[in-house]
Figure (tube, rainbow, N blue to C red):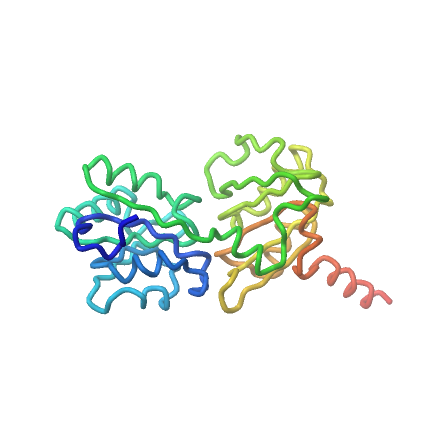
Length: 263
């Protein structure tokens, strides 16, 4: 494979996965790509220390997104990338986690290829893998889970989606972008037959300063996110493997407090 620093390889875009947050989880190839960048088009949650790998002369463009509001719509991001590549720049499109896991990387590859331009992809440690590893939460386990699924929890028509078979005994379900809909997600899973007593973990700000790993039972998921004031970025993990993790048992703590109050 030709080096990303090859001068003949100019005029292209490199989709780079920045990992779940901690700069130490960048791949060597990601760092190499950043060092070759003329332009860095980055997500809003990228740690500034990651951007520091790009040359001081590189233009840094934030296309930060918030729930239900994009500072730059996806079509605009695509057009921005294409315009800079056509000008001969090496454009690094820097995304949290992995570009192809709920990162719209596929859409951006399509847009660049439709314009007849070169695009490469550098995978990154996904949020699910990075956050789970920090919490010592194995997403699969020979004795507890032989399957793992990933879903987005902020999509419209949540109740109409078919999640049948994604959670339950012997399976792990990882939900991205689901904190705002935590109560609806719990209701949906229970309506689909998942036990209200199924262990659930919420991994908040995984690999970043101030990270928290909390666990409860499915029936308490929505209430716990409110009690603990959990905010994005965070992922939800549903499954028996949660019991193997270091996540703090918040429901048990409440039970102890109640016992102390009525003792």
